[in-house]
Image (cartoon, helix red, strand yellow):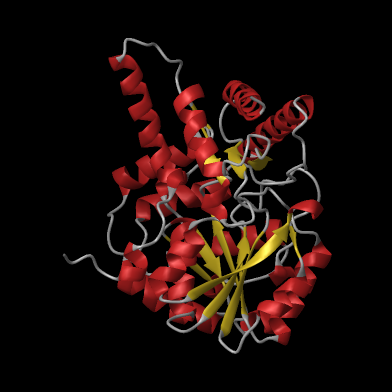
Length: 398
């Protein structure tokens, strides 16, 4: 039997994308038994509960009606790249020009494109543990090797640079960081970002900064490593910053993100973009332009809602004696479920869905450090969050 590249074929199943189907199966099985289950509580995936704002949707419709939808530049149309450069200065605190920006197929596509342009077979890449599961999948696709560095659950999931130093080898090529973090919700303080940047400099590494949640911060301040560099140093290409419209503007299904890097590295990235999907649809780019140039109160409104939901989760966890830390950004929280015997988080997640009809992501999806945790997404409604967190806590305490 032919099954392609074995190291990709043999990757573990990503439960986050399959749990929704399993929830439907549980519902059907209950109906076949004559049982009536309440609708499943879906806390397993980072899918904002808000509809894409009207002015963004309208821009796409106007593009369809009023302009030819042709091929475009691989790195994106200049008018959108200019708006992105202005957004980076406004939100992320550093100056770039349109020549430093490339448009990609979502934040996922932005990271995949960057990795294809920078690392390959024999290279080692340092990734956080716990981490967004796609890092592992993408590195396997590139042929590079993921090397995990632990985040410290006892210090609000921050990295320990001394531990990072122990993991560097002659094959280490890149360090990936993610703040605000998925799955932890951690926001790295400025001094931590500065230490990570200095680490990358000392070991001559690329620093890929995943800043997909840069506008979803509840306490503290988002610090991009690029904001700590001179323009000349940024132009050298050491630091690559990745962003997405998916989270800030509730545009997950639109699939548009972007990369900020030195102009010569963007040239390399442009070839990867051209060779993979030619260009992102003009329709979607017009929608993204409307997102950046239109009213920003939609971003603030969604952030305020996530903040309220975060506070609700913290309150519920304290009520049930399961509070460990406060997520300061993004819209995720890790919940320790170790009191339930010796079962790991994955088995807990499967049992919880089957017996309580609540879907959560097992911590094992994100790495070894979070094996006894489950991750919940606070992108769901407050009603779903309240019911789901209560069910998690009560189920864990059985």
